[in-house]
Length: 94
Image (cartoon, rainbow, N blue to C red; front, side):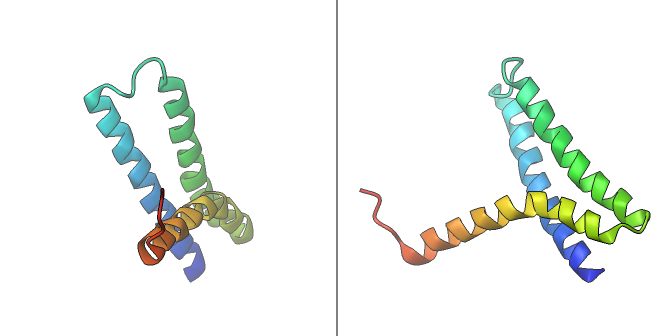
């Protein structure tokens, strides 16, 4: 049960980052009618993962809820590892 909430919290942080970039894009005009469909699908997918996992947990399908949360958590964890590699390794980009 605790692992579910850890995954859910990590996915909530990812969702907050995406929402931040969405609202910043709305403010500066980079989110426009040209790419609003992509943003709509992205935000809908995040809502399905976050709310769907809570729904699955509420009807006692905890394993399926964790699998659904891992769909978003795996790319997030890979990105965190990439950033840590850059910060620790200090690679040369030339």
